[in-house]
Image (cartoon, rainbow, N blue to C red; front, side, top):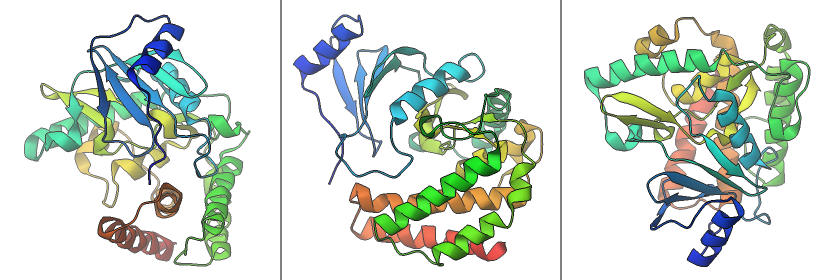
Length: 297
């Protein structure tokens, strides 16, 4: 099952006209993503379409296209991100960045170490950007990080119940583990711009340098420590990344954010219709790491 929308060539041309852009010679659908539909238009533009509005989604997965546009506008000049050309209710037209994903490039060894150090510096610059409140833009910002994050956890636990996803611990127990650490969350006083999806598939590289951070739709204003969940997905923080970043990350708060992301990854597969051996293997991996983080608190 797929929630992706498709446009034929005439519909694409009409949308470009709405954006004040001339029709392009070539159109290529980029199929690596699993949530939105993405087209490369000629050499210079990327068009992203939000999913079918009737498709089942998680509580925070509404109006993500607007959040992505906000992320790029806020980050422009601080990090290598696309420039927003035009945004609508269900689409985003942006400039195309050079490079291929770090995942597809298969970079390893000394070159990867050097790029991870560069990435750490880019993330540090990203976290210099502050906002007016905490949380997901599409959900509405609030005054404290604890209020924002407790709401985020509450939403995903409610989603697990709504989509009948079995959790490794009772939802009330998971909720209490987070609530008991509200003082840690309240130590975060300044809302920083967080991408929250910086795995290798969303980092572009070319000619030995990082050329882009893409797919900013999961962004929020919050604790910089949360950024390091996707940067160390199913792994530990590496020395090269942290040397480039230039400061330490609170381990207990990072554990809370790992729990949150693993919950999302566990639940989202049901409304998206993921199934089969690959999904079963992923669920086992998620559960193993989720239980490990829960047991560490």
